[in-house]
Image 1 (cartoon, rainbow, N blue to C red):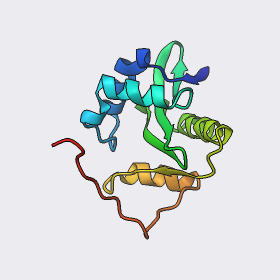
Image 2: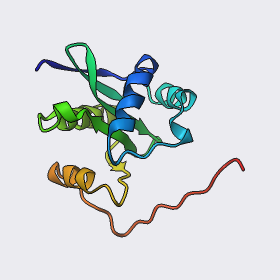
Image 3: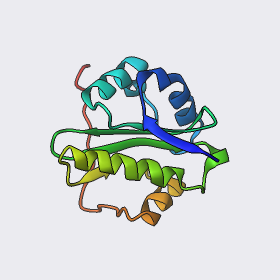
Length: 141
C-alpha cells in the first residue's frame, strides 16, 4: 500500500461522490451536487483531502471553515482500505490545514444511527457534545 494524500479538487467529484454513496452512514443530499461541492471547495481552498492508492481514490474528506470553527464532512474510506489508518491520516491532515488558517476547534456531524462512524470518531479522540442540538431551516422555499 502506497497511499498518497492530496487536495480534493472538483475533478475528483465523481470518484468521491461514488465513494460517499458506497459508504454506510454518509448522508447525501442536494447540498452534495457537483455545483455545491465546487462552491464549497472554492470557499475553502486547500482544506479538503483525498487518499489515493495506486492511482485510485480510496478516501475522501470535505473540510471547511466558517471563519470561526472548522467543520469536517463526509469522511469515507473504501471498505478494501479500512483499518489501515487512512481515515486517521485524512482527519489529521485536515486538522493541520485548519490550524494553519487559525482555527482552534473543529466540529463534525454524525448521523445518530451511524454506530460504526461514531465508534471511529470516539476511537480517535472526538467526544459527543450532548449539550448541543442541531436545528435546520431551508433558506429557499
